[in-house]
Length: 52
Length: 270
Image (cartoon, rainbow over all chains, first blue to last red; front, side, top):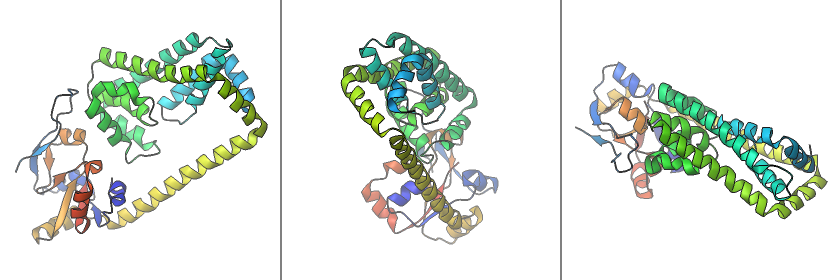
């Protein structure tokens, strides 16, 4: 993914070690998000929305 | 084996060779099923092979392999996809590309998946992960296999003279042509591999720990946090780092890239 971003000219990039799992493991704050609809229904909206 | 021998070999063993090539492609090994299909089509035009038998053999074997991948995807989930993508020549984009096709077209994407290298391997387990019904999957898969194999066989049948001519010319060059093709492919794969390794090494150096990120956020540093998880990952863990943006990388347009270009980005996955 970072490779694809670099192709867009975005080079000041830092991957987070361990990803979200490591962040949550340390007990750091998270916000809940509405999961995208992944069932195969062509009419469904699949854009996830963020709740504050 | 020179190309003329290949046609003779296909004539005798096409019913076995074609299904074997199709299986190899379906488990991620890039072998030339398409030239073989064209060859079988060309042979069929001269009545030298039973094309119906070859098509039936391909269909039965392809359906069996795809149904196995589908069941694995259905039972084991995204783990199967991750393993498959690791074998791909484009491991960074393989899963996202397949998911994009699936989300946009649903099971109908399977009709064209076999025409796209890499996609045909990932689509059946992805259909399992997305819980497409078994009958629906089998019908679309059957249609996809028939469309793919039928197209190349028909082209071979129609352009039989051209294929025979190309084969005869290639036979003159013999093994040299094969050697050049193999060396070119090997150089291409090595170049892609080396470039990716180099880039990943640079990224490893630039990694940020969760503790450092928390400290920087608490200090009010200007850091844009990008959530790069796939829709499946977000569905599995519906939480995010506060202030992060969920972005599909291939959806970033030029304007958005321009806004982000000057800023420090922290990317995270699952």
